[in-house]
Image 1 (tube, rainbow, N blue to C red):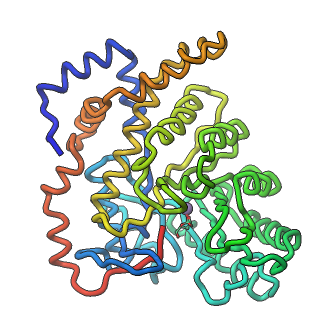
Image 2 (image 1 turned 180 degrees about the vertical axis):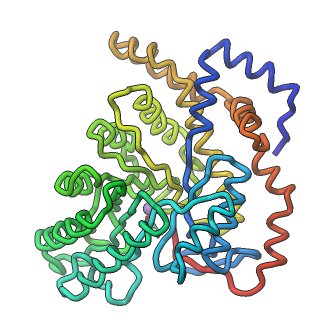
Amino acid sequence: MRRTGPKTLAPALEALEQRFGRLDAIKKRIANHHIETPSWAYGDSGTRFGVFKQAGVPRNTFEKMEDAGAVHKFTGVASSVAIHIPWDKVDDFSALSEYAQEQGVRIGAINPNVFQDQAYKLGSLTNEDPSIRQKALDHILDCIEIGKTVDSKLLSLWFADGTNYPGQGDFRRRKQYLLENLTTVYKALPADMRMLLEYKFFEPAWYHTDLADWGMSYAFCRHLGEQAQVLVDLGHHPLATNIEHIVAFLIDEGKLGGFHLNDKKYADDDVSVASFNPYQMFLIYNELAAAEDDPAAQDNIAYMIDQSHNIKPKIEEMIQSVVACQVQYAKALLVDRAALTEAQKNGDVVRAEEILKEAYQTDVSPLLAQVRMEMGVDPDPIIAFRESGYSEKVARERQGEGAVTPGG
Ligand code: PSV
Ligand code: MN
């Protein structure tokens, strides 16, 4: 890692301006591109084979807010934190919210957890036992109340519900249970809170999951109403799925609620966003940037990281991930949209692809460094964080067991 030198910055920016133009507008958009970090990625986590403990990890939700505050301080764009209940349950959520604000962040999406309790072995909202369906429903309704207390605008739902063996469950009956319960949840939402509905085609259920793909989430959201939108977790698709197409489709329907950003190699590995497949991330951002240019397209998309870092230092990886998003977003903003449309209309396949590659292959680090300096943030977030001594400080101060969360 090398420090950005001010001498090299000016000529690099000039060259970018000459080649692409619009740099001032692009800088503004990068500075306004907000990325939420998840509380659960700050605690110790692992795989089903074990958890590797790290020094200085937060021991409670308040300390998770401190670490999220550090990520925001060094990136300037990560000003909110998603919480997961009961992992982040505290006695006083107003106090948590105030504490978060003192750390420079606010509480973002509320994630109910209806997958860990022993009662949910055969499902939560889809369970054949009405008392278990009610228990899951009550928990989600409680989470809406927590959301109101901390002034969150997002209820983010993921269900582990599914079956492991043929014959285990009745698909249609389970679908009906889910719709009935989600309708109750939907009706309890305050007018300014959105419900984001996440899907996943496998795990922990192996035979079927009740919300297996974006189309199923979309169908439920259509039934529920405007405040219900689909959440795309980048790790929740079969290999080779064209995620950018899903994204474009959902935007066009006004139904893209947001993202759980991460990357994957095999399954839901939850590795750092854009670490394996940066071009895919660029192509996703390309759809998003194109929609931002279209005044008729929806503009309320939530960008949330959902990762599980079991071998990288937590805060550094979170900073790295935020920066990785910025890199692909910045590249997507460089795409010459007018030229691309023209090439598409003329059937010029090679030119169209080259326009994307020209943007993708451009080094945007001087642009990001400049944006950061204008925001009053160090141009090199990871280096600056390392130099700050924060990790050493919390390792000294936080003695005792760190919080453990099962995964991301
Ligand atoms: C499930 O794999 C998931 O992506 C959901 O978003 C959960 O809330 C999160 O991971 C944490 O387990
Ligand atoms: Mn997720």
